[in-house]
Length: 362
Image (cartoon, rainbow, N blue to C red; front, side, top):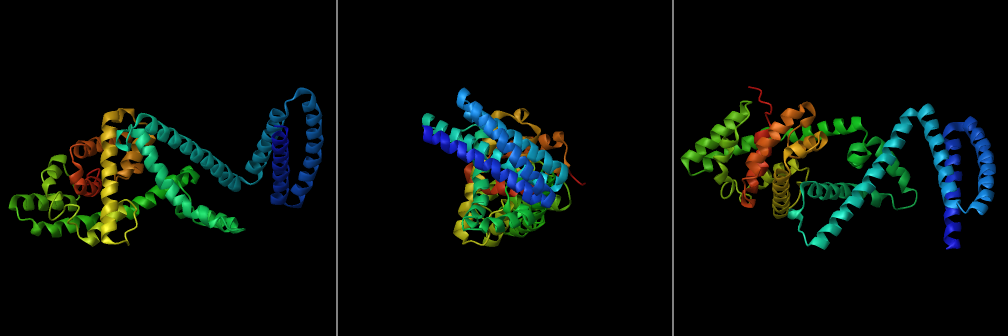
């Protein structure tokens, strides 16, 4: 026990010395001189605290409070003298804290599932969404973590993080400005595929043997191509086309599936069978989320949750009001909660049909 306390005291002292040294190195000669003075005064104070701690037994609390004080001074120094670096510094530690909170939340959900014998689709909406988002975050962060393992490779990672934050970092490590900017970029990549997917539906219409369904599909595509927002009834009228040929999940053309994969930002350069399987998995997961969200109720969502839900389903929510987001999500749930798992293909195409022209330009 005494050995572990001594180790913690030594580790804390080393952290103190390291931060003071870093302040000196980052600020040049003047700051280095200032840091040396701070080091001497801190050493004297540290010794005083140490002698007091022998009598009071409060080693841990004294060291933690001293380190917290030094850290606060260091952050104020950065904020005052290096505001750009301080923004990166504070964003990084805020992101690290949020990521650890997510990890703790995921662990709580997993324990809950194990104790109560729950499956994933039986979870409440927020728990289900937390698991989905955390899995995507970890998948994106894993390559960076692996690259940083070799000696001195972490310096390369820092360079990549600075120059390519959108590609390398996950959402927790973005500044608020970057979050809005990067969401616009990602949605722009997705929205460029919308006209192509609608054109593919138009070219598929002649393959429909039922003349009425063929006519309804063409009318729906022409309406969307004309800049109008379709109604839920118009989409439901052609739902049978998305269970079998020619638009069922098992009947889609490979290039069409590759285009749909990009809506979920999935790798499209994979064998057709694997692409189909991943599309099926993501569409069913989205159906389960919609059912859980319908049970929760849209009025229970905060504004960030509401906008995030719209963005996940293909809508650029950054340029819409809260009322518009809620109205669109209500329309989406009216459609998706009535679909079966076998109609997952219609759900994927509805991301295009319902989001492309909302609010209507006509």
